[in-house]
Image (cartoon, rainbow, N blue to C red; front, top):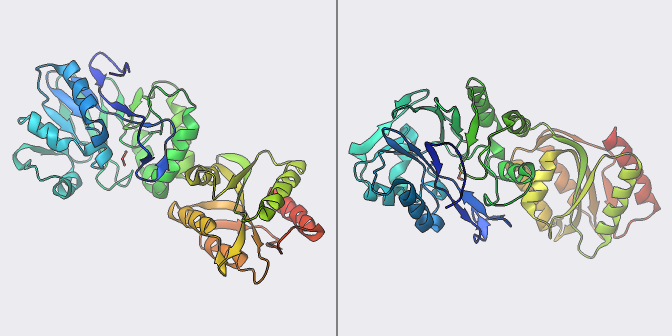
Length: 387
Ligand code: FEO
């Protein structure tokens, strides 16, 4: 069992998963992911969430090590997504007197996942309600769409711990030694990014609580400098750029567009860009590129025309940005087309449909390979986007 110290009475029973190929069947997680689950030991024993089916055996062993013959009195269901809820049926069978704690939406959705009859053993809680389990008191706050409609977070009043569901989560197993911000940002933007307004609502509720520790459902327990993490969430969920920099997201079929954007990157740097990041949409991790799009205040997209349309990876990228509510940024557009270029028009339409986007002039057309005129236009675009 992972040696994760929370407190004498709040014990970590979660599991690291380092063999999963894709989280949510789409995100690469080179350092795995953790499914966090916690036990609160008091006059009553509370289990905070279960874990993914991939982690069942180790999780049961962890619970057994902590509880032995003792029985769980309450299971709090923060979130019904199967990476946390898969083992509800099993744990209900193992502890037949255990009460399942959730909100109305939890129990409305419950039968979609489980055929377990919990009618006589469910406790429906609503906003601000408390559950006393001895010296500990759990208070529940609804967090709809952070990341599903039934999500709720739990504040434990005596130790001032916020059990934050997916909020403040991060990719990466718990024993991974890596920067929190990068993988927490990639996690947040890609998984919860669409629901900034709802995260802002939750942050407003959190601001009324005296929080000493945050226990999320993925990633490390946050114990110090909580303002840092809360501030990051405030930036991300309000769609404010985090850093001054330019993401150049491009596709290149035979290397000509790539050569051109590398030249553009040089020009941007010469003109004082603080940071320029190049991302090949066909080869680099799309989730990381989406993360960078949100991180920086400026983005330039460059794509060849393909089948009289947009190169498929660019199309996918821009559609992802729309899904995630990308907004409030400066954007430059470069198309390449050896005959009948269309990519610029299509990128313009997709980007133009986003909120508060400033498209910087000139929109540039490269005909196969860059030339002196292209470089002149790059200079102009660089001046305008850096203004
Ligand atoms: Fe980690 Fe939305 O589940």
